[in-house]
Amino acid sequence: MKQIINRGNARMMAEAGESPDVVRRQADMLDRPIRDLVARLRRAPPRLVVTCARGSSGHAALFGKGLIERHLAVPVADAAPSVVSVYRRGLRMDGQVFMAISQSGCSDDLVESSISAKQCGALTVAIVNDTESPLASASDVVLPLAADAESSVAATKTFIASVAALLRLVACWSGDAVMMAALDTLPQRLCSAAQLDWSNALDAMSQAKSLAILGRGPTLAIAEEASLKLKEVCHIHAEGYSGSEFQHGPIALVSREYPVLILMPNDEARYELSRLADNLCQKSRLVFVTGDAIGSAERLATLPPQQADADAICLIQTFYGFAARLADRLGLDADQPRHLQKITRTR
Image 1 (tube, helix red, strand yellow):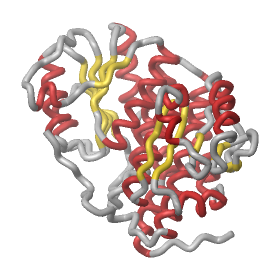
Image 2: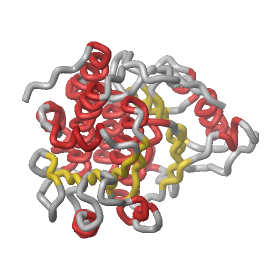
Image 3: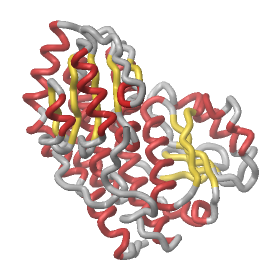
Image 4: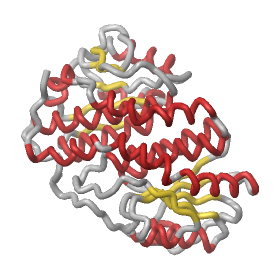
């Protein structure tokens, strides 16, 4: 069924549609910087990676945490920028890696945190779209997102660029040939993912005031990013959870009319999340699951599995199109969400 998107949502859709080209450009632009960075990391292996990011970039950092911990066994911690920008305390980071992720590279708290981390002995890395930004200037290593300008307030292609850059870094650092092969086919798979139709979830989501989005492993960060997009462009209170964390309290929210969207991973985490999905079908009639049919859940179409981390990136590509259509159904301008601006500068 052909979807008609109002002109207010056109930029978000167009920019999300540029993601395949962005990932293609990255292959060339990131090749040398990543090889140089990986050489440094192998000469002096860090015992810890600290990430620093906010908003969609924070979800990309969470995606990177999963990649680095699962494929490299290096612990990853999420820095609180206010420790530096508000409380003026440096952290003991001698010999470790500090990785800041930002679209604009202009947020003062991220810039100050990166400067402080370098002063405290860390190797600082900026994954950033604007390579002339203050954050880039403050960092030892710059990994360009290569996403070009993004004018829609809600990040789409820059989020995909961020997680693809992290996937490329970890593939090179770990020497994972399967992951590298998945990166080669990711642009075409993103094109295919953008064509998938989740309109069978539109009626339920358009009537929802609140809902939960569940993920696990590679799809946890994707669930959190999806929940942010529903808040931003659809004004729906959605929360992203790990399937296991959801059972430690939030599951009490579920009623027969409470929607739950489950983004199924294509790795070992799938089994437990599938069990939870089947259980939730006994509690709600509005359970939506990506991939294979589970119980009475409504199935949302996905691409055939390839590599679990790359597959998760394809899920958010499909979701962005769904979110724009949902905003259209609700009569909202996805390109200019209320109270938001493209560059948010915080301390």
